[in-house]
Image (cartoon, rainbow, N blue to C red; front, side, top):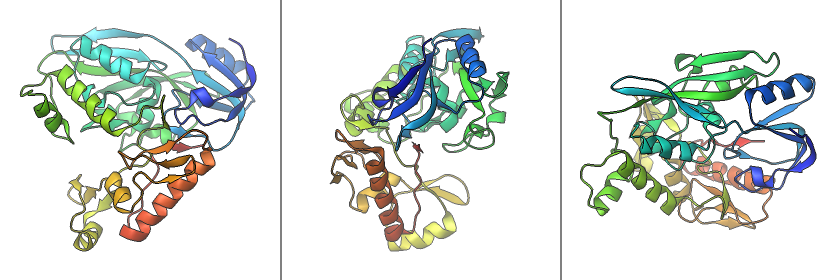
Length: 337
C-alpha cells in the first residue's frame, strides 16, 4: 500500500480527463482502508470508486483513496430468494452478469451501467424501469473520521430518484465498503415495459424472455446509444430526467404537444432530458474536443483532449438553452468536482 505523489487520474475517470491527485493510494481491504484513514486523519481526503459518475474540472488537492475492495458471496438463501454481498470495488456490470449466470434475478435491467458496486447506492442508479432500491437490502460503510463501521438499511438510505442519504445528510462522512442485494431464485419479475426492450426482444423473435435475454436486450440498446468510455470519454447519462409538477407541465405541454413524458405520481411527470436536449439542437454538436453524443443527447463526451471545464461549459450551455426553450430546468446527474 504505497502513497504516490502528483498522481495522474486520467485512467481513473471514464471521461478520460487529465487531472492530478496531490497524493494517491489504492486500498484492497477494509483493514487497509482503516489504516489509511487513521494515519492520515487530519488530511483532506477524496474517495474514488470506478470514476464513472464524475467530471474532474481541476486537480485534486487531497489524498485520493481509490476503493479497490473485491469479492462477492451468498450470505443467506431460501427457496425463493438469495442474499448476495458484493465488495465496493467490484465492477457493477460484471457483478450483474455473475448474478444472471447463477439465475439470480433483479439486476438484469441495469446491465452495462458503468462504475463499481460501492457507488450504486449513492446515486440509487437505475435503468429501464429498475433501480437499486428495488433489490438493495443494506450496505456496510466506514465513518471517515472515527473508522467505525455502520450498516445502513434500505429505509435508512432515503432513496429517491438518483438520490440517497449519501448525497445529502451524511455526504462526505462515510465510505461504502460492501452492499447486500436480495435477488429472486425463481418466479423472476421480468420487466420489459420500459424503453425499447420489447422492440429489441421482438427483433430477435423472443416472446418469453428470461434474465439473460432481458440483459442482452438492455446491453444491445445501451451499446447502440451510448459510447464505450474506453473509446470515447464519457460518464453515461450526464443529466437527470427532470420531474415536473403536472400543473406546470400542462402549460408546457400545450405549447409543445409532441413532448414525451411519463407519469411518476398523481401530481408529477418525468420528462426525458435527452428529448429536450435533442429538440434544443444539441445532439451531435461539438465544441472543440467537448460535445454532445451523436446517438444519445443525454451523454456529453470528450473527443480526446477536452478539459473538465470545457465539458462543464457545454453542460451549462445545454441547461441554459433547454430552460430558455421549454422552461424546464435539467440538473446534472454527474458529480462536478
